[in-house]
Image (cartoon, rainbow, N blue to C red; front, side, top):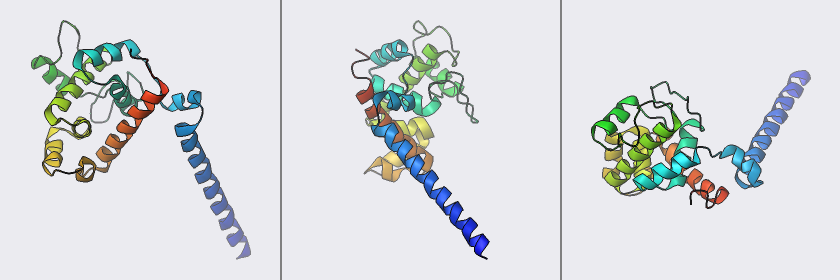
Length: 193
């Protein structure tokens, strides 16, 4: 029995050490040196983000935050549900944006959602559409993640949207994107000017 008890204590020590290391990593990612924080908040495709954000009147730091959360800036990212590219757009959503002329075919001549500039244009246009529909960024983000029908139901409840969201994944998405937008503003001041 002594051996087993001794073994279990080492497992506990290892678990505590792992938790401490993860907490230290998380703290460093949020409050450590800027170069280290930028590992967790990378920024690429600045020109495409800036031009699409200006064209659609969306905060470019919000666009960067959505990209980081959705794909980690991987233009080839694909979800199990079929979402594609940097901003994880569903092809049907992109088709709808094009059919409604929300995305100008003169600006984007292709619908290749793995092309960073194309994906950013469609994703930013969709964000603008959602922000105009809901008049609140957090509800727009919930709709971006979980769809219009779900966001409509949550928005109809009134109050804090975070409390109304019934999907933990969507609630976490909204919180992480809002937090990431703030981090991008702090880490990359003036980069979109």
